[in-house]
Amino acid sequence: MATIQNNIRWADNTAELKKNLMDGVNTLDAMRASVDRTVNAMSGTGLFGAANKVAAAIQQLGGVTKLTTYGHYVGTRYASFSNILWVNGGDYNPPNKTFTRAVAEGIRANNPSALHTAHCVRGTAALDFWSGESWLTVNDTYVSGDVADPAIAQYQQPGQMPFLLIEGYYENSVPIAQVRNQAYATVFSGGFGHCFGHTNI
Image (cartoon, rainbow, N blue to C red; front, side):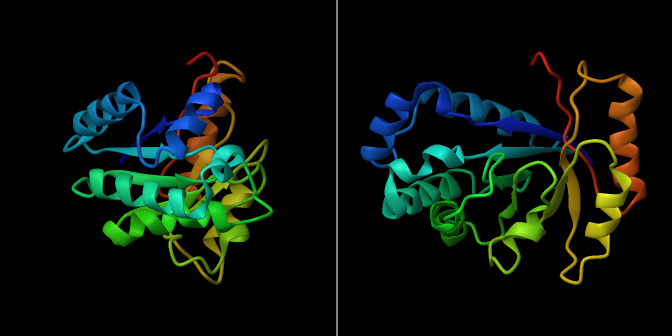
């Protein structure tokens, strides 16, 4: 199974994001259209998309109720697609998990079979930080340097769940052999796949 990551990052325009969150579930038409095209194009192709929802640093702008409502909205909008992995967090280990949890639980309310993981800070696996969360169904690793040892550690977790390499080094930032090694080392150490990225894209 190939994995591609479709990041929905709104932090570039915080003022517009704040207005959208305060208005409830109103989101940018262009963003919705882009996500819709991507999800539809991948459907039935064997490609799996990862949707990185609301950047963690700005989640609190909407508050728990609005974030749960947003989760209901996107969970319902994409409930018919089985090729989405919802990525919670966004390179962050939040000191208050309430805001991230609100969106994830909102999605689960209308789409209980949706797959969820978390994108923590580099060196932190989803299951290490979010253990015990009812929405967490897919574990991941986020590494620099060695890939095999962190992958084996997650494979051997007592609360074992399927895992992938959510992020390593991107193509064009290290030799291509290292990018390939990240993918191979993850799969040969028990993972089911990896996300690929390119520094300039």
